[in-house]
Length: 451
Image (cartoon, rainbow, N blue to C red):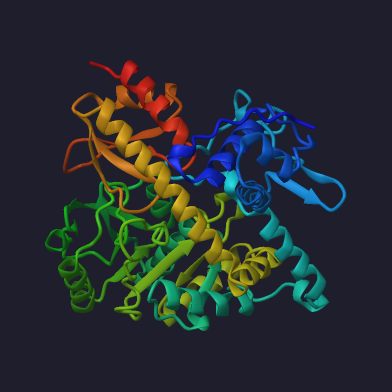
């Protein structure tokens, strides 16, 4: 049985969360190997001088995340596969392999609700009729489309019946197929206005789909609608939490954008990439609910659960939804059926909502710790966009490229974002850095920062 050597600050509060973080980090670092048995909750509570309920809560959280597993008569152990990965387990780390992970906008993958997902998959496999495993509608299984339509209406104020929802592998595919459908209707490449600054990763996908990109500046109210090109066929926006600046599209700009789309006949592509992860205010309703005939809403579980699931959706006007569904049939015959049913089950039983509530609390703690540490150790860095999401936007006085190198050396996930209409900025992710490690990382960043 492992001696955990936990450090708990009673004055700081959140004792169960502290215990969970300490155990989680011990597993990730390899100090606690898979299969190692942990002390009984009663014994650990006695060692720490805490109530047993606090330790039970911490263990239950880690079991839900898949870090630990608990079986009657066998106690609580570190789950198989929960430890530190080796180079053989993660071939992307080998020399010569591309590395796509560890983006500033990536969630904490250690918090993926493994047990809830496993329970959902077991339920699906036990109840799904054989015919459901055959080739089906490339637009997605009806059960998931119904659950998503209801969920988006309840949480995002969307106006999307199930027939207007199409399941895709993620926001990137959803937007690409929508642009492809638009270009096909036009009989030429589509003129696509895009917020500036924006995510550079999407631009090659959109160009390949048939778009000519026109950057449009973003200010403190969001995209500058008056600067939209007169010949634009569509505009791509992130209104709930602009990437990367974090600006929320103001009510006046929302109205102006919808009016512009109505007057010009253009399509609005709404990237709803992290709208559910709001901390300091109620969620902002989506644009799609204001103009379902002009807006394509694209979302996914990449931030809420894990990017590797490759599950997303578009809620679109009927003609666009039909075109995207046909394109999916021509491209790859749709998404994995069992995963779709599993996600539908998570939503139906409330497990998806519970996971989001838990992660909002945790990410808020990590964000607060990062903002405080930056203010203390790097006061010359101006921080924006912290009311939601998994990253903050910083405007440093120093060279952003040098600061990114220093941040990565300090263990922070960061990247430079350039703009055609302004100075470069810096995106720093906080989702994967436990709150109690933030100050140490920012001190190291300050020590390495140029100038």
